[in-house]
Image (tube, rainbow, N blue to C red; front, side, top):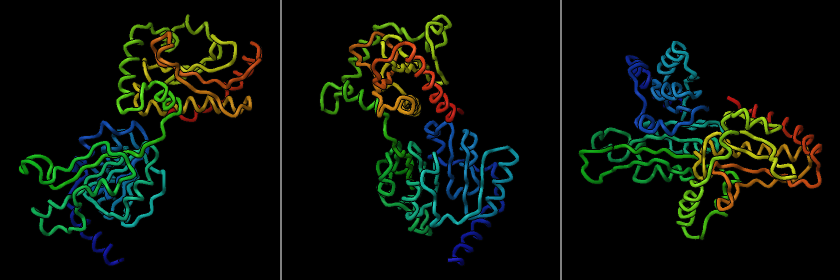
Length: 365
């Protein structure tokens, strides 16, 4: 095994000796789908070579771990990253059979490298919501490069099978379909996501809002509710956008970049009102990353109520669209306390607010 690794390392060292990081581009799967990258997080560039993809990921705002068997390539990438102050931790390592910690990365990128034994580990290494960008040769590549090792070529549909635990977002395998002189030939591209559980306020709303059990029920409900809500005023706009007069009427206000949280003054019992700063109308309007951040906020409020009041669970819900009096999406978190007066209500909220602010601060930046 040691001789094989040494031979492999020497082959790639020789190939990279006269090449530069500056002249290296990122893979097609990454270049064409960069809009799917998260704004921040930790990325792994596996078998990175001279690091064209590593640089691309770092410039996008990600902290990058770059692995390759070639010390020559890694030394060049380290020097480039240091010169340009890029967050790239490059390491010369034999990635074959490498153990990768679970839930470690938000993005994993692999291009023109195939180790079938690593695929399950790569899936586990993604955090919830994480994205895989994978590009590899197909068997058709052997027609133009007969000396290529067939072990590194995929049969049709194989890449989907290797990552069947992830949800495909983009998949391209032109194979031998149509005009083989055009299109993407000899390679397969996959962008896939490790799905996260959707916030319970969202799944509850979808269940209540749908008007049937068939596949199109939610689509019909979205259209119907949009039409009704479009006729309403956005009464929460002043509160969400920082209007001084609107905020003077509230007490105990908490906010971050995404939401405003206030105790709901329209009911005698204590409950929290969560108002997104973006003018979403329905929960299905919210982009996935924002939806999960909103779910975190709702859970943080529920947890704060539990710690302060001892309730086992708060009810978290989006009002029924047929009963809403304002256009903007909003969420209630109700610990279902009873019998507390105004003084007690403020005292409880003050304690709850401390916990909420602590939770929000832990995710800032």
